[in-house]
Image (cartoon, rainbow, N blue to C red; front, top):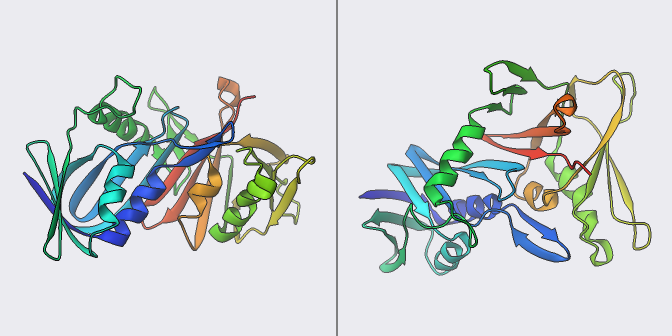
Length: 277
């Protein structure tokens, strides 16, 4: 049996961010449907790999208690939390989740053997292991990626910007209902006074380029470049506040394009692979 205490609002925030919602062919979908709540006595952590394996998110919430709790369906759990109070006790025992708050209890089926996704043969436990394996390779704050042979690849571009600016730039993808889910990042060369620019949308309905000033520049490329990203970045960035440190990695020689790790502080971070077409 595993029992933890946790704040309802913090848990809902962590679950909503972990879903990594994006729009595909005009339809919004969650890139993560289930997850595992890993509690170490003071923090509850969710480390979740997206369905297509191109993105990963790690978020935290304050908690009391230790152990791992399977969340079989994030939307279903959010539905339970919507009618519970702020001070929650969650118990997992015999493949059942019990949510208690202020004299109210809700029970939900929950197993590590449940499917990670609706149309998947992988279990929640399988995907948790895959998520943790990738997470262990990434140092988002310091810009280090550990390759399969144990060697390290360091970021070739590193800077800090305001998260609110990232969200404001990426959400312009929704102008006139477009939701193309494509974000072009343009990074200037190291000598340029320009900041990061993000371009979204199609000119037929409104293409927008946002200029974002660097709060700090740690490492800039000799030559500027542009690269496309997808994965619902507007939905990712809206869950955070304050500063964000981005580290970009160049995997082009391996045919994997450019990827970035973004650190939001407090042990929270995300990983995103750039588009290859």
